[in-house]
Image (cartoon, rainbow, N blue to C red; front, side, top):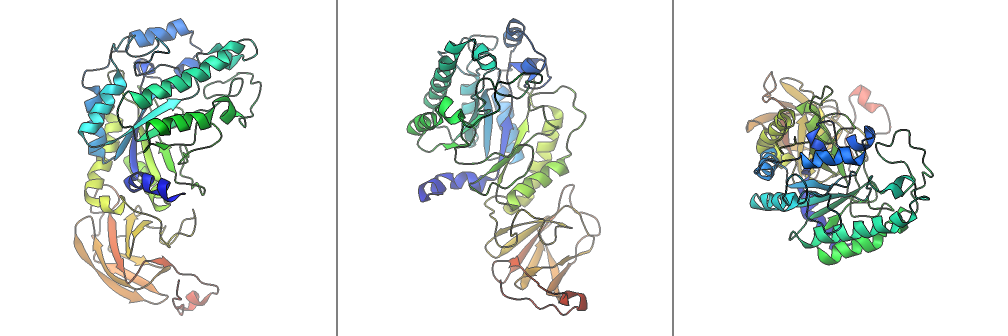
Length: 438
């Protein structure tokens, strides 16, 4: 990563936690964002959803307040999803929120609400648009191919021009015509080869245009050719060794990024926090998704999870924001003390977020150098630190029961930056292991 790009991305890498919003006319049905293709809805039926889409006047304030309460530092909204419905005024297509039910530019409302709360602005844009027949049968609708690419470039230009400073451009689904797409169960694809997506979508030109209009913008890797400033593992936490990365995830299981009226298999707030800390400890960001209802109201289950995360961050945020991988983790493996939780680090401080609470004391093993002091960040109480054999440390004075409704955190000060201790024999079985330098 160049010095310029590293400087441009520093705010994003420090932020760690963002909120994703999948919302559009599909929210009227409450059956997810892919219902058009999955239910094989004719377009005239689908358009009725747009005509019946009437968001509340304060929808943008509601979602922005939710992001702020949750402790998110940035938000990404689906300006256009795979159905081709634009939440903004566009000269390219009447299928947009200004010329259908809402009668309003919803992206403009969203951007204004975020800025009032000091949140960074992200826009999602799908380069896949199901409504082009040329996508499904490129050999029969050859003229569509050029037109769909022209539309993409024109709409991205509008988004990058009409709303002031945009911080993140989040593309999705660079599927070339005739290939498999999300929601296309049963489709007889002509090709699964995505290698020419960068040429078809003119990704280099698209990104260059966005950067010219928005010099500070950060762009993800989903506009074709895996080109972009950051990687985007979806529904799992996986390190991208080539660049910065952000794991995006839903409360429910996939598919279902948009509003689902009745969802059974949801993650608990503890699971959401676990996934967030797994991403942060490994050096990534965490983008947690909500699917507001047709009015733009955050559902109770999304709000409950995010409010509990926000309450936790109010106390433990220093263990998250601005944290970077140090020398504790040598790769995307479990690491030391994983039987209790996860470390995040900055300089000589390590924070242990405890997901498996041990009771009155905890043993810190396989880490050097010496520990100076420890504090239960959750309560501010100083803890007792004692050295033990095998270069271990006993930290005691913890409450017998967990002191908060999510994961407690211990703040540990080492003599210098903490690092993983290594061994090449079984001396620890005799209690004679001696710490070596990092």
